Length: 247
Image (cartoon, rainbow, N blue to C red; front, side, top):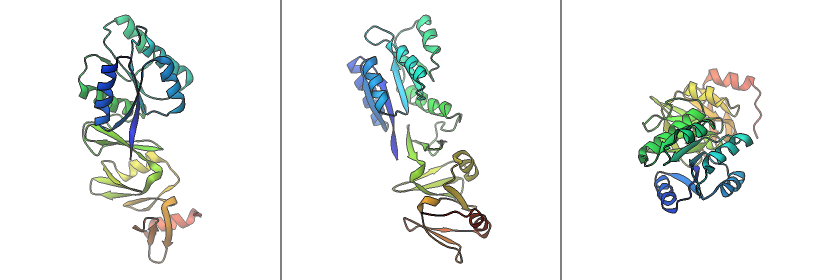
């Protein structure tokens, strides 16, 4: 599990500290930048999951300028604005950068958390995937974004050993942790579209890079972590037909 990494552009020390503390308490990893140049430098060396921009920095619309910079450079990171400026002109300028949300200060802190979730859903084009319930998730080819209380955690796909159906949920068994998400195995398999994950049973999707040994006669798969997975005849035949060669 990894925390979502957020960049916050905010020049007011007290407000910067408040938003940083609040988001960190809700399981986000936050870096604060105080000006445009610093934000650009940070964005060049660190990959963020989200960016929160105050619009007026040192009396100038540097938040909008930074959003324009992101778009021009093709940096595909969802961002949202927070501002105390109630100006239709500023709003129209900000809107042209295609933010995921626009919050007016003072905003409700839960509103900020919900806006971050909506930004993730919109970015990966999976509306209502997180909602306000735990165990919901947004899927991408590289990460699962899983709702955990009021925040979202990030799970690397490559860390998953296998995915198992358990009643209405799917359990992700990872190197160190496990998570339950409310998505079908069929939906996960289709969205992942990852050749490393093979279905070996109607209830199991296995990361072939985590396989230690296969006992074909016993219809059994042994993983690196010594977990044992059933191998059904139906999927075993397809598996053999694909001529998969393991490391």
